[in-house]
Image (cartoon, rainbow, N blue to C red):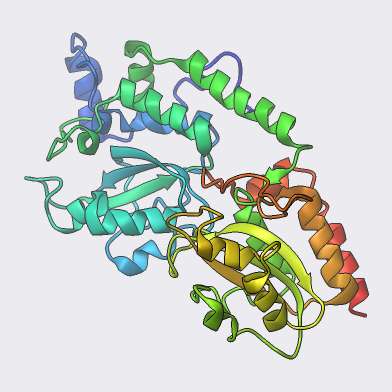
Length: 386
């Protein structure tokens, strides 16, 4: 269950209006005949948008005191998953005033998407004084939610259809003259609560249906990285070294082998990784990769370089682990039992499917919603090493 009560919306008075007492009194007693504009400005409905996110069980306090001021501030955001996010302005980290200005969904990680925003997007506009104009003293902050994929897109659509977000509609400034109290907004705004409830409930039902099924390995990239971290693998050793030709294979160890994975990513510094193949090299990594480069039938690297495996816009990279023998086989079995790898070729030497670069699932989501016996695998690996 999503935890959303059937009698949405709940908690009358449970959300603070987050405006000063003087404005609140003037609004409640001096503006009884005021009509809400259509669509209402998102910055005026900050308390109500908080109510919506709260009902969706989003962690609103996660980055609420962390102002986005420079490149270093972007490093604190998740590098392994993305989803629905909302940028908002407020006077300082401790303030309860929040003025939403932009809603988006990213299939990249939040960190990578926000770095792009810093180059030519919302963050760039704020840092360069282009937004909001004629206003001083406001900083940029963000809600990062756990909603992703189609569910995140549907929530985003509801918010955009209901509210006028300044940076989605080309407004160069925001109206902070007053904030509508959450409960007043709820009474005066036509909002599709039932539809939002169905979205949240539907996500739970969909996850239950998928629970027993294999996940495309590309969508499970964050969890696979988490698992390799738990197994004390050095994931970063070759992470920025694309394997572009046979000469690149020579950098890999020639004196030992073990469990390895090939994965695709858009560029060397990207945090987005799409695992495509898992194997065990019994001799050495270099010898095995040379076969992958030269074998006309099973040579994965050669097929990628020749364009037979069409992964346009992505390069191939490798993780070489220290796990060998029974430990390596146990990890490989877990991965093949739990994930659907596109390059585990069939008997005719054909690809199972094309690369799936749709939304990746957060590692925590996979842990909580899929029956993957990863803890048991860790125990097997530990026992094999004794």
